[in-house]
Length: 376
Image 1 (cartoon, rainbow, N blue to C red):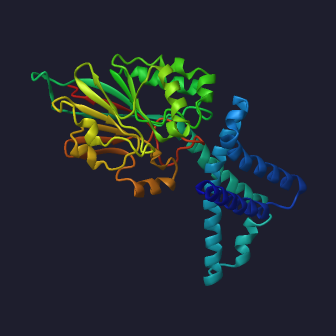
Image 2: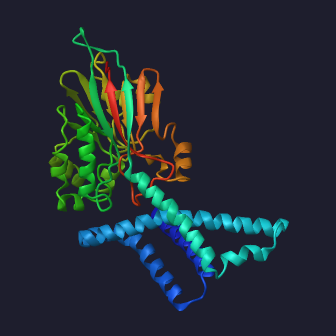
Image 3: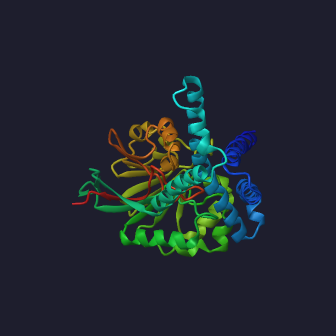
């Protein structure tokens, strides 16, 4: 039912935008033929890539995915511009603060007006693409005052934390390997991944042998991850089988004791309605040791404080990815991006190193987090 509603809304928004472009452009056969052709490709590619992607050649599925999801965000900005124009026109009809033909002169059958609108949106999207490709290094120095073996102070420890890789038809192997180089340059002791390694299918990851790229990550204490909602979307059985080949330790409602010094908890995603509570996960832990928890979706952050979690790392939100969606994530989550201190619990919600769909960051950032614990 939800898919049907999304499908209908998406088609209506496309109709609204393309109808406005139809009116804005001069009535030439070539121009309108090109518009209809583009509309068919842009709209259908979005659904074909998700519904039939795994039955197509990988290159074709990847192409349709990139076109369809990029158009999703471009469409959003066309809709905003046209809605503002319509609201301005409606207001003018009510209050008559300027001649009505002054508005239609550049918004109806006028190449200059159409070109200006398309050029403005193109500039915004180009800036968004460049912003996505700039991976911001976030420094997070922390102090955790917990002894080990009742005598030695904990640390120092360097963690590189990432989330929301969304590897697949949109983000390929060569792009991922650039991230691996960035991670290795930090010389981490351990790498933690807060979910959504996979986008919506493991097929391109297996076909391109992404697993060998994961093995290039240099972290003496290992790589640990929790499941995200997209591991479920991709099929948890298939996702688990792929992650096993990467050498990444996937923790699903389980705990790893690292170097007899600290714990890493991987909480299963909220898509598992029967996942364990934080209270159950920490029940048998030695609270004298530092406790780090990976929990993909940042809901109920007070549970970290209540259950003695020293550091929680989450992702999922992408901070909305583009404005104005970022306003929605800010309203939904207590913390949709950044650092939050609750009692003794340190919480960081990452906007993600990768992205879903179209590679645009507008008002948000792609990032990796370098966490230095007890660094002198």
